[in-house]
Image (cartoon, rainbow, N blue to C red):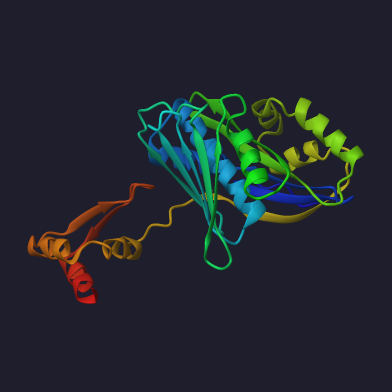
Length: 286
């Protein structure tokens, strides 16, 4: 058994009978970084932490080597949460209309998009019910869009300072799963894991402690471990690339002003200064 480690990470394991594949994740510091960058609190911060955790779980389950993006649109279409999870474990998030309460229930939608090996995009949209929340929406997405039968739980333990713990799990049924172990697993998840924040508190957010609880009494083998951290993918090069889509006439107006252009990343609030010379280069290239 690998020694316990600190920091956000995910652990994948397979039960030795070939019935279940389980991925557990600790996303506490990652969620805090996203929440701090977006300057949100309360229920909006909790929803964002759950989406960040769930998006990472989908990526690790379906396409660990490619980017996955998860979005939640509120029932009244006034709130939008975004989570980006990248192959190197970097994760970031975005909130639109942060002062608007995000309403779950009829009309609230979760959209998940992931890059495929051929460069195309796979996406699915499911409703986020008020009763089953983010976890239920993730399970519906996996079943309806990915044809993967699984049980998913994402949860947050709030604190006076914000987020104490963020974490979750996915239990994927494998082809060799038979009725007896399935019945045991279903009953355990239905009863012992019904209150996930309490379970996360008891485990201290440690993925291996959570893993041993999920697979209690079942021999299993850990197969992989993955990094997870709050980190934005923005850069000066990406800012320039985004400006390349601006019309030539608009670029020429910016150059004539002889003033540098200041752009701030919506995800991490990093400021970028684009000099007129760089804009001239874009005009020449266009």
